Amino acid sequence: MTPQDSHDAEAGAAGTAHTGDGAARAAHTGVGAASDATPLDTVSPGSRRPTESAVRIGLVLPDVMGTYGDDGNSLVLRQRLRWRGHDAEIVRITLDDEVPDSCDLYTVGGGEDAAQKLASRHLSGSPGLQRAVERGAPVLAICAGMQVFGEWFVVSDGSRAPGLELLDITTSPQATRSIGELVVEPQLAGLSQPLTGFENHMGATVLGPDAAPLGRVVSGVGNGVPGTASAVSGTAAGADAGQRVEGVVQGSIIATYMHGPALARNPELADLLLCRALGVDSLPPVDIPAVERLRRERMAAARR
Ligand code: GLN
Image (cartoon, rainbow, N blue to C red):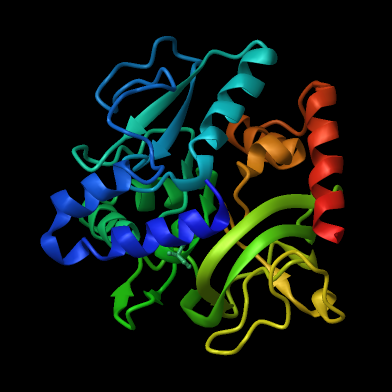
């Protein structure tokens, strides 16, 4: 899917929202969000932990929040656990499920405007994720996932929806959509390597005093500025890129505009989440030359 296609898909999906949840959901399954099939070999929230030590990764609402391959973040986490000899499984939490509070960590993907309204409603009506955050379970939220965790978000048609109030952020539209490669210098202890991702969002996210940025933008837009033309569009690095910030860190939540999926491109971030979930300081290294090649290639693309 090209960025323009995904933009068009977003417009199309958002246009079905007024016909009700079913239609919006159907539209989303047709535009790149995961379908009701279980291609990731997942388990349902009601299933029993296979062994006492098995790590359970909650994949939150992939039926509506899984655009641009963000479901892959849960796959990366599971695989990196298995490579280290841990039992691990992905718990697929859909709109049909109560949200369990018992997972060891959670991932939430991006989504179109209509999808994120559905997600926000479901997650506030079934507050298992909020309970998990309260006890400090690590959570990775991408793009619309990040916006939904905030105080409120305004979508492209101007309507304002309440968020889950897990993050001290608000989101409202920029003047133009930000689409392109993003490179970020992390500002979170435990991360030393540049972060790489692909951003595609209309929303600009403003941080309140309780939220810290994930990093400083080296190339791309990042959190953006509400209602103004972005100083940078596409993939070019702007003169003031260093002034901009990207993502949000608050408590056990790490949120970012980076698709990719983000954890496939940023193994250091994946392992940081896993260390937190396992309560360890470090994990044995895994060396994947293809990931290093991908990182180099995408960061070079950002500079073009
Ligand atoms: N609908 C949101 C926006 O455009 C989020 C998009 C996304 O998750 N990619 O800002």
